[in-house]
Amino acid sequence: MKSYLNSYINNFKGFPKEIWVLTLITYINRAGAMVMPFMTKYLHESFAFSFREIGWMMACIGFGSLFGSWIGGRLTDKIGFYTIMLISLFLTGFGIIAIMFLYDFIEICIGLFIITTFADMYKPAMYVAVSNFTNKENRTRALTLVRLAVNLGIVSGPIIAGLLITRDNYDYLFWIDGITCIVSISAFMLLIDESKFYKARKIIQRDKKIILSNDKHPKNDKNFILFLLASFLTAFLFFQLFTTIPLYNTEKLNLSELQIGLLLSLNGLVIFLFEMPLIGYLERKGTQATKIILLGSIFMASGFFCLIFSKSISGLILSILLITFGQVLLFSFSNTFAFNRAIKGHEGRYMAMYAMSFSAAQILSPKIGFSVIESFSYFSNWLLMGAIGLVGISLYYKLDKNIKFESTAVEVKKINI
Image (tube, rainbow, N blue to C red):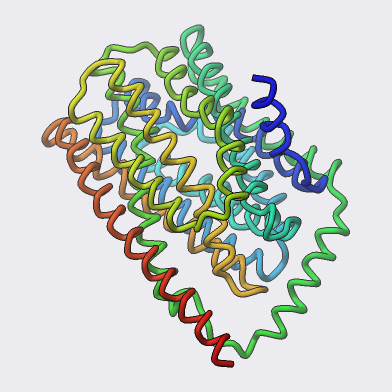
């Protein structure tokens, strides 16, 4: 136990102050993000919206995420990640508080789109910020550390949310979520030396001028497009964890809000305990990222096949554990793969496209999931998700083969030179 603890702590060493500040801000923000895991229940129970209507509302969140990621990536390359992160947190904080005063279907759809646009401008800016304050040796661990903060927030957020809903109503969730965004801004401005951000930006702009003549573009990189398509499919599965699965827990397993919160927290707790040691081990071992991503997609798909064949709480726990380990392997190394694939000075554009693959999944996943459930059954939905998972596995397998061939071709070219 002591050796594991020492090994666990060692994985957190070697990061600059800026990475820890970004991690703290992300935790504060995500710990307060209590609304989203319960949004489908809130809309269904408080307003009696149908599953199809809720599906459209969740799609609006996805469209906002898609647009926010795109414009966030563009603006990050133009004006820098520091400014974009501040704007995003500030507008998101007030926007989330405002959403609780909306009641009409159209109003809520528009409100969710606008808020998510502001919120997801943060993603590409944050990816670029982390990557610019790390090097190749610790970049995956640094991105994992920030994701760890997200999941630590997910551990505490749903439990608190479940207690608040049980004791009172949903109003406190909106207030806490909005206020924590504003608190994040304060921590950001107090703890970060702004000049370092602009210094990093000048380096980016200098490198950007050097490679302006390079015609390489994300859309011309076939392996990157293949990677984005596979990422979309696995993200499609992942978003079921926060949309259809909570309702499945209520309607089929008769679980309370607190029990649902505890189950969602299981995802974050497992990640908190095992992600950094596992990623640190794989990083030191030098395992090829595409092989790790492929293994993660197998775990992710297995989680939904588990739901097909099990209708008990134990089966649900096993499913969440499989999805969680798939999430650990997939998302940690996918972030690094996307950034390492980018041209210097255009990282924002690449990371935006990566974030947009998740946003597109966020649009379609709840809409299709709820439509299948309403028209057929939960069983049909889990069967569909398992099939989508198999397609994702095949794409990641092809990507792994392509990258291996690409690396071999580069080595042969070097030898010939």
